[in-house]
Length: 281
Ligand SMILES: [Fe+2]
Image 1: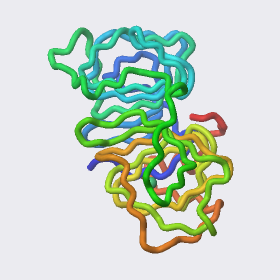
Image 2: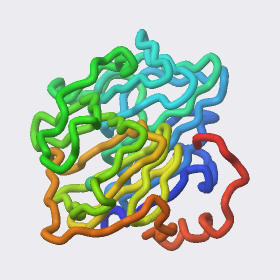
Image 3: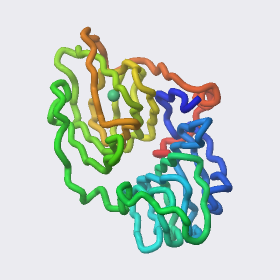
């Protein structure tokens, strides 16, 4: 049935579990943030222990990733904190290694199965984004949307060559809000997914802080959003490029809406028993 609506959860409250054996990354733990029950596609934070070593080979699924802490090597690629990459299924990869450990926000587009050697299938070279340091990547063009002011900055990380879906980092400055605390709400025709790296984002389902995550299916009204502290967030749109439909009506709002999450049943249990942690994940 695809992925459930997850909006929003602080990753800190979720438990670590062993990464799937099919991934063949010994000692790696995972926090599963969302998962497709049919395809096995998932979003997870993977935690690599210091001294981690993995085999060369390839994966049968696309792997998109963003290093949120520590560092990782994939063959000759040195992936430090805030390195971003997209490795298509069947892309050959050198051995993986982490000297001091790493936490990596990771997106698999199908159940990930690691295999040794070289794949008999060609990888889709159009989709490859060789890992690069997003710190040094320039801020890109602002959205042309009339209601999102140009003060929000974007680093465009990827656009799919087939359906145009996008991955980016955005940053809103402190004090970002709509005039008179009043704004239309938004909906999107595609999935919107977000992991908060820093700051805060206040919206109709509560106040997100670093480690907040949502997977929002298409067609769900949300917002408006504002922030006193500013923020730095990792976003994906799935199925198509960022597209915003604004409601005809305006909503009054505050910075302090109560937490009203929409979560699958197994997540509700963790919300009721939050982890005692202020770490990012
Ligand atoms: Fe949105």
